[in-house]
Length: 415
Ligand code: 3PG
Image (tube, rainbow, N blue to C red):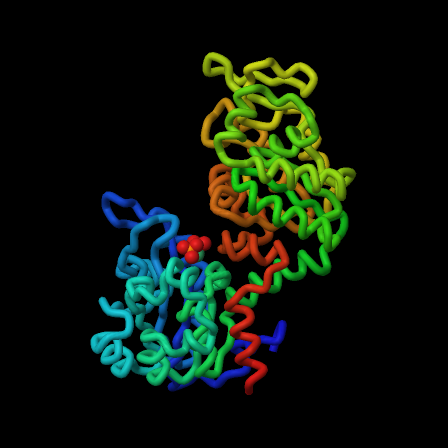
């Protein structure tokens, strides 16, 4: 038992049907339907391999696509092929989630065989819009079709989908009501790394928060400053620009107009509060960069031209942040320092990522853009831990109890 949740060590799985919820949701090429990344598929391999090697009959349940963000769903067939290659053993696929074809395929499994069911979000009860509208309790989720059909065929439920643990959906929170339940190895590792970082980080502990998801960044910022996990928060991207504006700094009219257009007036109020309560622990840029005629230009804060639009932190700030990273013992990063996709405005992000590769600190990265930057600058092997979670990680770091964690804990308490 860890964190009040059963682990795989506590169950005999040989000959048992283990229903395992994984998160292999990946960006998809909309034209060809092929997967543009396989990071999350790789990440679930240790759990699936362990279950198969221990003789379980493994049934994998997963989603692909979001009804809120991507507005489209895809089959999990391509994922079964990738997983087969990574595991070096066949992963069967059935074009069904909980209907007769899926049930027959589950009943036909032999010890050590692995079956991937189709996209669980093809079931309407599993969709985020349904979740938000109906707010089913976990007991009610156990009454949904997917749980009523699949649970009687399984002996054990394993949740390895940490990246989806913030979703209050039947495939994540319903099975724990009716089956002995454990977290998988990836779930355990992700939970362990980030809870350690929140509760017991090696000091000094820095949080670098950038990018354009300001709501998420401010939620996290408040939480890690309030609970003391962060000694300092270094900021970049839109997050930093809003903090600077809230402090009354001139950041250029184009920057200000962008902030207005992107509905950030509420965030300026939050930024003021953050300054009042934790100002001495928040670092903002001392210079900013933009482009003029396609060329990079930089200004210190007191020389920003009237019409300026900030697209990156300046080189002095980047250097100062790199120095902080090199002197830290724990660094968590979510979000780039600017528009790192363009050569003229990538210096800030590149400098910070170089420092992340060099520092002796324990480094943790989370969020899609940060993972892309890590790959772009070839730092994947130098970062200590790359979280698969986006929304789940942010909510965890903001101090929320994740629904799937609650469901797993409740299951352990009931036994
Ligand atoms: C993710 O991509 O963050 C997870 O797979 C959860 O997806 P969702 O935000 O569509 O629920």
